[in-house]
Image (tube, rainbow, N blue to C red; front, side):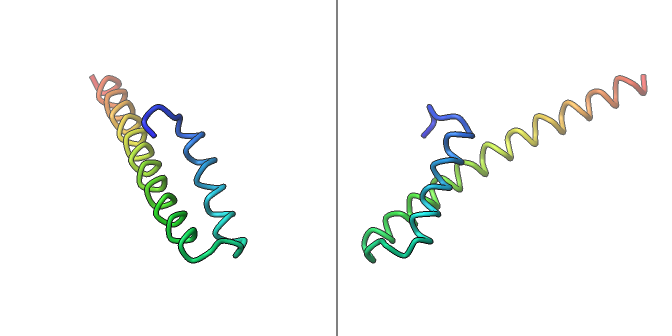
Length: 68
């Protein structure tokens, strides 16, 4: 998962959600897909949080620089 881009992970998550929504999976396959989807969701959130932190730091640094 770590070698994939955010966009690749998100696309994979979308495919998992679509397969779950289709209603064509067995219970066992649905549980596996749900688990995979949760793992993908958690990884996407981690990456979004990291990106947000970078943006906030950049904006804060720029504001501090402009004040001096």
